[in-house]
Each structure stands twice: as structure tokens, then as C-alpha cells.
Image 1 (cartoon, rainbow, N blue to C red):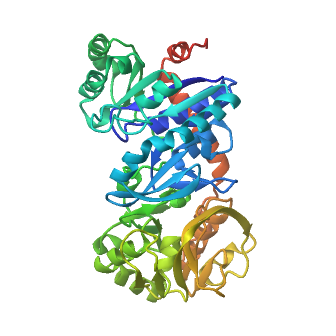
Image 2 (cartoon, rainbow, N blue to C red):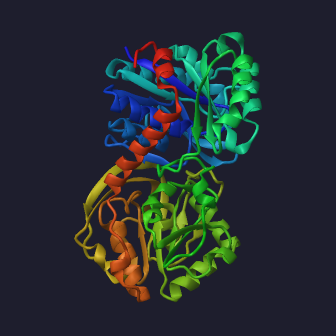
Image 3 (spheres, helix red, strand yellow):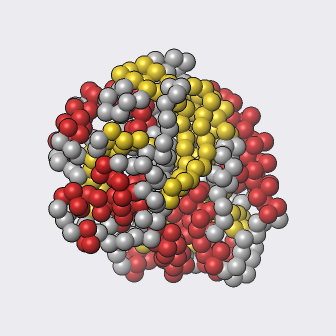
Length: 489
């Protein structure tokens, strides 16, 4: 049976996912077969495994850090919000259906066997399981039938490290307040606290840490600095949306749709020194970019209408008329077509149809069965600006319920002049593809394409996981962590 450690947080975005990924990498470096686990995840950034199952992106990152293949057992329940009060519920990688929040909480007991079975199977195969909680364990209105925080910790007998975010202030109140709101048996599961995202001199923090240990009756297991590591994230609170928006030689604007999904599709472009990747929500922010990307969305028709009402649809069409490169992925791709129909209200948005933007000659119809598949191939017959993609190998995954009308061709990339679209998430990830796009934009703009540096995504990702592990190892008491798990370092 595996040893385990659980990372819980005082709030969403306290840094649980990143610390869990760091621990996964450390345990792998120390020679242990390690797997991540999060019983219930709520995210629109998801991934399709080789087996065709859908899971949250955070556990994919953690699996990669641990050097293993992502597996839906690592995230048996995924909630993908469709409205402010409802989600698509995915169990063991497959869609169960759409539920409003009250229905899901009423039926939560039904999912305990799936959680238990997934965990137990990992327990038999690995040495260590790094478990991530969700939100805060002290949400007293949600504690009944909890299956993701203390309820799960009790279920699998996991020691807990409680993480607080000092960057947003009030970390001592966060940590002690959370502990104080727990039941005595829950407090007994907390074996240490972690101050995360610290900037400054730790000596100034020391007096408070001692008082915190006295109040919480557990040791401070680490003070982790604010980490500048480039690792994919899935949270809607991601800082990528508010990152530096200064325009560089090549400027790429991503339309930040209200229900944007899989924004990690564009991460490769963030890693070029001469490229700016900006997320925009207003016409005034769009300006005159070299490329406009329409991303995936969990609610295609509703977000298309938002695009229309905000004036961004008109702005994008004007840019297309001027020759700007337009690229849509999944839901963004569907928006570029002539019509979208959802006769059975599969998207649960209450809207059965809408005219598309008319920039690509295709129609989309939503059906009940969801396409969930990894895909790979070689680009061919790509015309226009992106002809440089031809001959390059791509790989990625598809997650969509919309289909093209019968008889329409579904290429890796569809093109109409300077407007392109694809169903493939991760289409820019494979070696050479982002390079080719940036090179094409440089040539079109009259910039020497030699200034667009080459980039190896796989090597870069491994480097970032090692950097993450180094930072966590240096700033966490790993001897304490191993003792908490009943192991010697």
C-alpha cells in the first residue's frame, strides 16, 4: 500500500496544485513511484488521456512531474461549469450529464464508490500518492458529505499539510481560522502548515511563525517563496489573464471568452522573447494584433452572443478583412462557421441556435455523445500564411459535442484565406509548430524570421518541473514531510 500526503488550502488559488506537483517531482527524484490524486475537480481546462477519458489539467501536470502517464483515476470526478449554477459532471473520464449545484450535492454520496475505487487502484500500484484538496476544508456550509477535503482525508487516512497564501494578505488569520473551524478529529489530521507565495526576508516572518505554531499546535512545514515557474495551470484565477500586456514584435491577442476553456493551448507562444500574448475582453484592448485567437469554451453559443454584444465579433471580422491571421480552436472554431445548432440543448445554455461569424464555410450541430480522443498526424495541404506547417507532425486531443454537418471534411486545420480553425487542443505544442507560426508572422510583417528563436516544448517542460522541485525542496522541511508520511528521507 502507498504512503500518502494531502495538500489542502485555506482558499482557492492558495497554490495547492503547484506544491503538489513539486512534491510529485521530488518524490520521483528520490526514487519513489508517485501518483497524484484529486477526487473532485472543478475546471474548464481539461485533458483527454490515451484511453479517451477526460480529466482535470492539474492532475495531468502533476502526473507529468511524477514522470507517469495521466490517468482518469487520478481525478475520478470532474465538474465543468456550464452556467453560474450548473456543471457537466464527468465520472471516471466519461460524461454523466449536466446537473445544477443542488442536484449534484444531493447526489454526492453516489460518487463515493468511484472515488474509493480510483484511489484504491492507485494505492496498489504506487509508493506514494500526493492528494490535492479543493477550495478550503473550512467551508462549513459544504462540509456535509465532503469527498474532497477532510472527508477524503479521513476516508484514506491521509496526513494533511494546510497551505495559506501570504501574497494576498492575512495568512496567519487564514491558517489559524481554518484550523479553528475544523472539528477536533479533522484538526488531528493536520500535521503541518505552509506559508506560500512569500516575498521578502523570512527573518521578519519568524516571530509570527512561532506564534502560529503555538496556536495551531502543528509545525510550520515550509515558507515557500513566490515561484516564477512556467507550469500549465487550470484555474480560472490564473495570473496569465492579467499578465504583462506590453506589445512586442509579434503581438497575439486571445479573446477571453466568459467560459474560456483549455487556455493552456496558447502557452507555447508565451515562451518567445519577441512575442506578446494578451487576453482581451474589450474592443479597446484588441488594438491591431498580428494574430487573433478564438479559444475553446464550455458554452459556445452563449459566448458567441457575448462576442457579438461586446462588439468584438465586428472587430475580429474587420481584422480578418484586413488580412490579420485568425485562428479558432474547438468552440472558437465553431464560432467562425456560418451556423451553430443545439436542438437538444446539450450545452444547457437554453439557446438552441445562432448564426456564426461566417468566416469559415461550415455548420455545427451539437449532439449528446461527446468526442473524447487523442489525435496525431502530419499537416498537409495547409495554404496561405500558415503553409509552413506542412510536413510538421502534430499531436493533441479533441473534446467537443459539436459536429460538422454530414459530408463536411474535418481536417486538422481548416482554412479560408487568412482564417483558420481546428478541433485539436494542444495543436501548437509539438516541436516546430509554434516556431512555424511565429516565423510566418515575422515574414508577413517584414521582420527577419531568424529573430524568432526555436523552442523545444518537451525539454522546457522538464526543466520547469525540475526548477519547481528545487524551489520546493529548498523551502519545505522535507525530513518533516517524510516523517509525516511515516517514512525516512
